[in-house]
Image 1 (tube, rainbow, N blue to C red):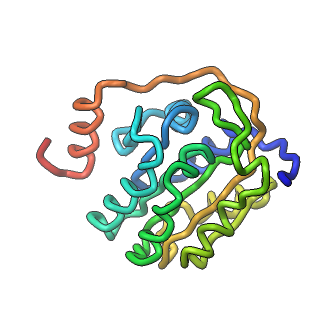
Image 2: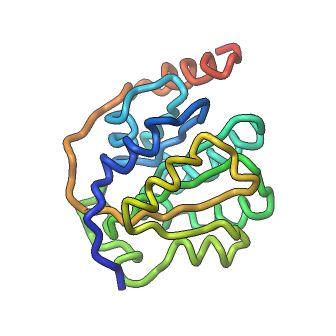
Length: 195
């Protein structure tokens, strides 16, 4: 059963990205994208408008391609539930610079607020550990958010998954560009690659 949490997702994301250093950020579908954009649009943010279930694997590919830069995936429990197999692949590849943050509100927010499996007992941190990601944990308080924020800009030496219990309340949508070619080109330029 889910514990009650009063952590505000928008505040959590803003705190995590406040001192992000050179971290590259991939967002999951929906609210995670809005939360990252609300924390400040940045050319190093790669916003996903679709590809539900793909954020963690896109983060894996980026982490392998950019091993000297921290890569942070910020997604929701519904999106991550659609891509559980990603945990096994990430464990096998073991990038030292990948952090996956799952904002767990126990709902499928983008499809109408139906209860997700995490509200019924599925523990995404335990799933990640079962797949071989030893550094998988659950955060339920501000102290845990602060501890993660202090390390977000530094590769952890192994992949890590942090599931953060957040309040299911919706925040106003902050929409970054929905132009995929623009977002891709801007992100490539931020990496110093030809667009």
